[in-house]
Length: 379
Image (tube, helix red, strand yellow):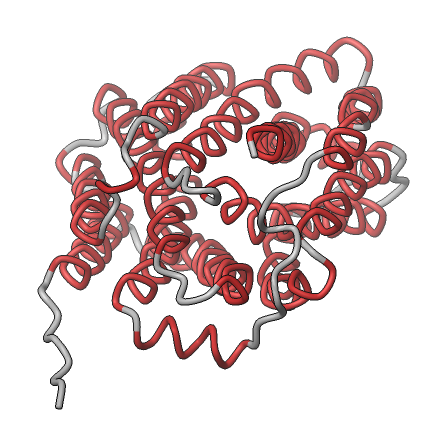
């Protein structure tokens, strides 16, 4: 069981390194391939679109071939996606590389939360998984940025690809209780999410997480740039938030399984929502750094506990991966839509109201989780 948790955590770390490595390289790619703003946005969105499309089929397929084989596929796709990006000769190959990465990402975050939270680990497992992903977001931009400056972006992508190759061996040796479970059906997963308050709430919370990532990811760097921070300064702020996210994920691993319930998840969602009121009060650099740090900490806790909550309320093992796939779809849909809505608000001069709207969504999700549900009548 511990070997399985180590394996999926290592894959989460490497996956996050590969994802974050693109960020500092984007200006170089934009110049090298003469990409327009729309093309650059499409490149960034490619992985999320694949996640949106593939997560439910992955969740259903997991019951047929087992989680270990899918995670092996995720580990194999990761270096392949990086190699394609590193050797790309145009936008089409870059998009193909990001699409392959998106498939690896979709498999990882559909299957691994159930593995991490399984065997009775709960938040102790998902907390370690989230901490590993946070560490990847700290390492990836620094490594790719330095290597790109010294030897070029191709070397950066290929070096990370080589570094991820041992994951295939690690995943091949890892076994978990979730390797072999009966195949579940989508309609049964949808019914469980509709009828079980905790599972329905988990869907809403993952949608909230996609929205907050999309809004803060677009608006916060723009506000900091308007305040006079250089690209390097913004990078330092992002690194700080990654440290906070990683530390909070590690602390979440200490939450006992019996403490993870709808009240804890709802209260944490309310905290995430409240952090988005900070930019409404002030766009100062100090306020924005505080917002990003506090929000990162709250989000790490929320991600850890919501996956643990969903795993503990799955009515039967066959539905664990399909429900994980549905949660991924909720996240990907809002992660795609939220930046578009925030961009419209920004163009209309209403960036503050985009933060307020996100806070309101957080409070609404929290209220839905925290309001007592009527007990079904028994004959």
